[in-house]
Length: 453
Ligand code: PHE
Image 1 (cartoon, rainbow, N blue to C red):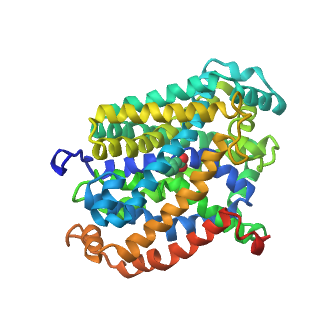
Image 2: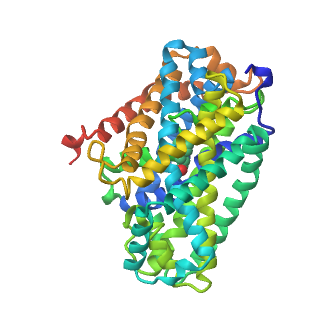
């Protein structure tokens, strides 16, 4: 496919909404609150924001430069700029495939919970023990989670099949405002709950005594996953940006929106958690076990529960679309398939992986790989290894290897914009990002335990 026939995103807002659609996802609403809860609340939030601005923002901008300067899929983009760095593109494509393997499964759960809220079935339980049992039985069931996962894969496929402008762009324009509106409604509702103030104090008041070097690393890992960087999604989306899209402003808006959603998710969840006296450190099950229990104590419980799970479905969908697109455009441009065939190749292969990952929590649980089931293994391999590695390599590539004229041309839109902080941008990419990412990487491999515990 040559440049002329390639899709482009409409206006400025489209670039922001589409990229924010990728960033804002289960990472913000499901993962961020429990990670913040586990790591001391307010102090974590502050460190998280610093990580987003000092590391996330430059790397996202770097990926935008790679994508827009080449107008190619992730693999083609790096190959065009420097054949020796093509591997970095493959890392992104592989990571997108593997992330979809478990992300589709969790997305399927959100769909199931939304439907069960709508039918009122979730209201039949009351104690935390009952909700735990419900969740455990559900994820271990041999066919139900697979069915919902498959439904979610097909939903994503339909949007991808409509194309970049009619599918991805249009859906982002509807889904992102919907998501923000739901979050605002839920935040107001949560703030009005009796006893909720304590939750907000926990979330916003920094308690630095809880901060350890490990907190910083956890905040960084969370920032990368949440911003969708280090994996080729932003390279792919930026390949559809127009010549006059302001890359700096777009990256800044996306990072701010992503952080805003994470903060609002905390505002929704912590007051609710505190108002019924549940420990905020309840981990990944917070959203699927703790929250349905909380909703059930409220008037109109199933309405709030349905709205909340709809929010999760929407957030997950705009992210699965972006991961799917990385693979679809890769198959289409590198394997010379039609977009339709490329989309089906992605859909079928990821559906099989996701079904296996889902079954690994139950029926196929007896076949662990390196001591982990497939679901946990995919999560670990992508979030802890491929993503930090991709981020590290991206900062080295853009900071040290990429021709400075390309950077300048992309950042100034061929001289029509000013870029006063060029030096700072390069400094962050060259020194700060690689140093900190090396630390995360070593920590995730367990090699820093010697110093930090
Ligand atoms: N950023 C998404 C989230 O917060 C997840 C994601 C990671 C999407 C990497 C695309 C690429 O849920």
